[in-house]
Image (cartoon, rainbow, N blue to C red; front, top):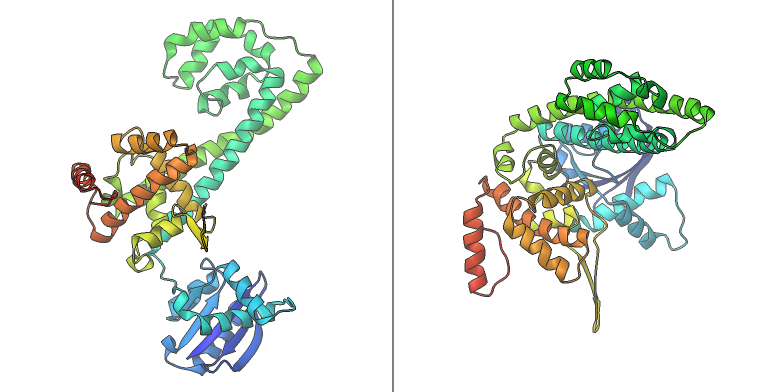
Length: 409
């Protein structure tokens, strides 16, 4: 057996290779280029033509280098950066650190603690593409939220009436109105005929409200100095010019995600969940993945989602704390899903309210609801069985009568 530690960087990778006895076979650096990757693969091939005999450890599972190693047939162990740091401290009391030392530490950690690590098993290309799209969409949503907050604050300083016209300031019609009438004076100068023509052009869903909107525009607002209007209207137009294409791109993302989600073999399982509309459930599928080997039991999935607390005990002292080391994308998706089910599942709402009455905060109560949902989702996922709420409630009632804990159907 050979153990290869890889410390990766943006433009190079440090490699350290150990044999079964822990002796260094080779230590070298490769550039982050196709030639560098070829050098690594040729070196691994020279160690042993039997690929399962050469194991790799690296501090990430999301890297082109990892994809190349997996496609070639090698086994890769992703190592959490905290684990790598603790392993380095075991071998370097003085605290020395370099890329070469980190690579050697990863190789040593893999050799000595292989049983504590789990080889990376990638999901299908479809699930991985869906994961990339949903994560990128969330990043764009955060960007849109920042721009909307800036736009709202800008309008409050010189044009607060615009915030009252439509349901949301980032709606297509609201942004179009701001672009066409960027100052209070231009909005006040509108005639009812011009306003109705604008609303018709934008396919406004409530044309009967045109007169009420016109009256609202005629209502005086607090006086604002002309130089403030001139400066802030320019900022407003700059923000709107960024929001308009972003809103359109998010719609395109939603369509692409919906299409990919529908084509995934596991979609019928996740579509059976309550409140499966929108992008939250596709996010759950993509983050959980479709490789069943990655989660041998429900506790593994709960730890990855961050719903399982961390218990520390020493002597008579016992502490339960929030789990921070987890897949934060999965935790966020599960939290939103659990929140959405409060309006669809009476048992989820009852559990949430009971935990709130017991003194838990909003997010802590949602994690508890999410913990139960993960048990259900794991059973569905492992056994390829859609969600059956009557069966779940019957099982829950039976277990309650026998004074047992809430379990999955």
